[in-house]
Image 1 (cartoon, rainbow, N blue to C red):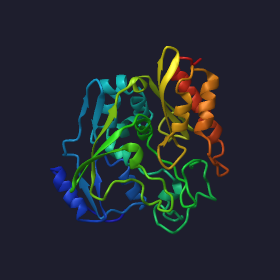
Image 2: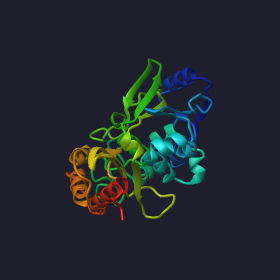
Image 3: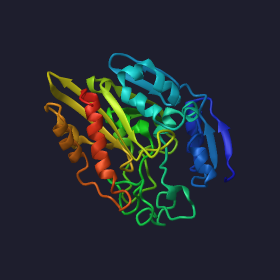
Image 4: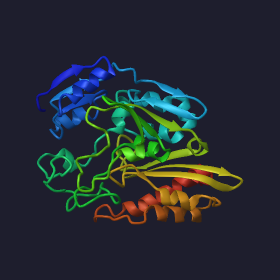
Length: 328
């Protein structure tokens, strides 16, 4: 591990000013992701600023919105009554993540900022454009069983690691950000950036900006939602494919649908074409299958990960059957 300095911030302003003053500084809260990366020398911050004293660990809810502070622990959010009843897919996504010990330490903001699990990103002996721009992408011709089938580029085909982010993107979550220029909000779906020709730039967060909270609007489809995760083992494993899905069904017809996929792209992948295909339809396996096919239109495998295309289609159908009440 590289040598680094450590500081503790008592206010958001102090934290922001400290990180902004050092281009290699980074925040730390739960530390469950960044410390692992530092041990691998995949990231080497010169300064870690502890923000655990900031007042961002709250969960507030009313009839229309759930607002979750960025320093809320994953386990607390998963068990919160407002989340369990208003956003069951979010609660399930959290409970499908990591281990109980990690969920008791990791924060919501840290999970949103979670880096990819691509083995080449973490192995500093291999080429990786995300870790060291211009060195190449070892996954393109290497072991790519876990890698992206959508949204990648000739510079990077990693996948996003967060289960939580998939559910939040499905339900139009908004981020509340705080920086030296003040506060701003933005849709989480716009926060994550596709790799394109600049794979090292993963989010729209400016250096020094903090995530203060994430806010999710409540709707019929958030209350009637589920999170399905396909993985190699039942516990403590990242997704091969995951699906967050919600349906608003009234009078036997689908009034609105929300679908997002994990494990298939460098960002949580919103399946908007599939959502449009479902609107106004009568729930059935045929309708769900057609929507799933539209969700994977344009997907491309790289050999070892070709299986993800039919797996994702089947996962979408299963998730939609679950929320429509038609699952066997």
